[in-house]
Length: 137
Length: 329
Image 1 (cartoon, each protein chain N blue to C red):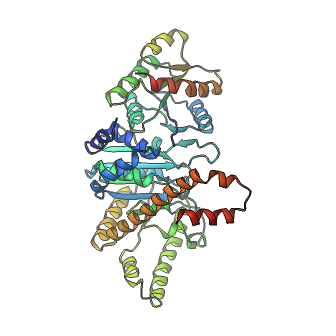
Image 2 (cartoon, each protein chain N blue to C red):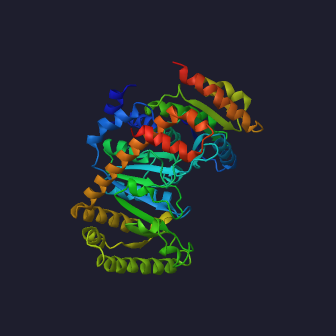
Image 3 (tube, rainbow over the protein chains, first blue to last red):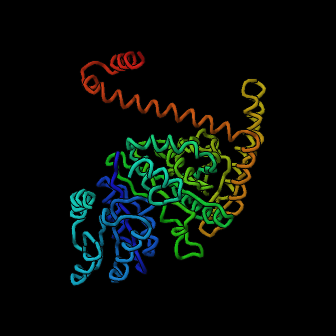
């Protein structure tokens, strides 16, 4: 039987993962298989894990403000390592300014979740959007 | 992606296709069996090492450090790490990969081309591994990984499933996990080829070591005594005595004791390879997995054909007899 697999990643110099851990727990309870990377991963490490673990969803959590340089690199390396980010759901969560939304969307981010968004919304987003994404291209 | 492409990918060191093949096997995709059947002749070269033990004793950390050590020795390493799936939702938090040494140490195992790490949810199977862990190991074996580390679910007392997949079993303990009665119980402590007392810098390590030594010495005595009673298993008993199970102390997060552990793992492999135990173990495993597969298919068939019957009002014993009667006809 198929299970949706999610890689939950902390990228870069950001030592806060309470939010990511809480989210991991909620996603587990929603029936997903969640692989948590731990803190301080590089974009290459996250990308390699996404490909080897053959995940359906990559969730990148950043509270450092460095999402503009880091997130596109994760996506770029997934492609480089043979994965297909166009068929994965790429999500970003954390302290992201609204001004940066278009830039992230442009490089292939599907969903952006800022503080205050209820977790149920994230789960709903995954369940609704992943099937669409898989069908595309 | 078709079967041919995937098989070629697995044999041709294509990580993406190996990852895909694992998913198909894990999901029990209809094509998985054909992939495994075709790759089976290319397996049997890898040394499969099971790492088991109670939760929180440091299995994942030991796996990471062992991986680093085997890489230093020029071996490629595949890792299958199993964590429990929820019996209620089927969801799982797979938290073994995060212990793997990354950019903050000298060798980055996350990016090493000769390392492949895969996390698995147990997906309903008990015993410390997932139903498909053995098949995933086969894929990594066919892909050419020389050492395959299988990390079990944090095991309690009875989780001995790792025996089904591993050539060498490492049982990990830590200080303050019980007394001499605990180490005398049947189950997980019986299956160890090598014992590790991790976190050996904590108080109480000597006690665990003493109790383990006592348990192992009793093992040898009982084996000798029982050998006087039965003649049939004498060969097996003699073989058991040929490998004196070592007890090692490690402080895994500091890398202490890891080299010695790798040495013992290699030594065990040499011994069982030479005395024929490896071959025997593997033959036994192949038989068991054939039985498992057959049961699985029969189970599926029963569920399909007899769903109505199972919903009925007859008592389950009568229904079972009826089903068995029909299936075995």
